[in-house]
Amino acid sequence: MNSLARQSSMTLFRRPSVLLNSVASELQQWRGIRVKVRNNNLEQALVFMQRKMQSSGIERLIKKQQTHHIKNSEKRVLAQKNLERKIRSQDLARKLKSILLKKVRGL
Image 1 (tube, rainbow, N blue to C red):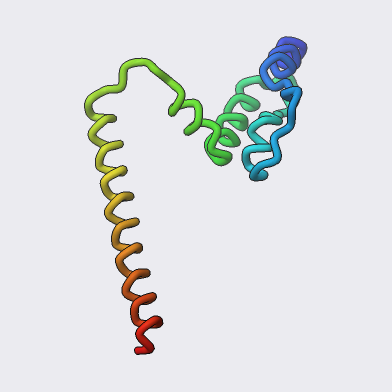
Image 2 (cartoon, rainbow, N blue to C red):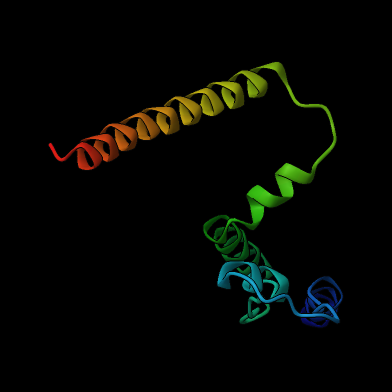
């Protein structure tokens, strides 16, 4: 079992030939996630790897790249989140604009 895990990790997480000069999180994503299998406990290693994937954001990137059918309920949730994000950014832009106008006018 341990050799199987090692082989799969070697094939799944190879480094690309060209390293990109970008944010550290992207560099970590190129390197992949490495998890040690201890005491031949593959289940525990998979759970640990899933937690690492969630915390590093790789899971979100994988979901973004999926092209299969998305349920209507998921579409509604995503649309609501996008709308909230858009409203928040517009509010922030409005606040920043008013602050800059006050500074320019000397108030």
